[in-house]
Length: 75
Image (cartoon, rainbow, N blue to C red):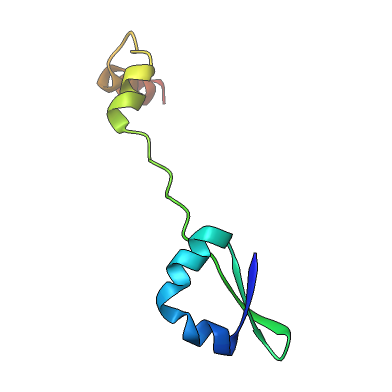
C-alpha cells in the first residue's frame, strides 16, 4: 500500500499504472484523509469450456428425447 496526496498523484499521473503494479494498492489523500483507493485489475478467471464439461459428464443410457417422452406418458 502506498499513500499519495492529490498533488503527488497529479504529478505522477503518467506512472500510476507502474505504481499500482509495484505497491498493489494506492491510497489518495486530501489533507491527510483518505479519499480514494486505486487497485490494479486482477486477471479474470477462465471459464471452463463446454466441451470439457460434456466430456466429464457420463452418458445416459437412454436419449433425452426418450426420457422426456416417458415422463410425459407418466402424467
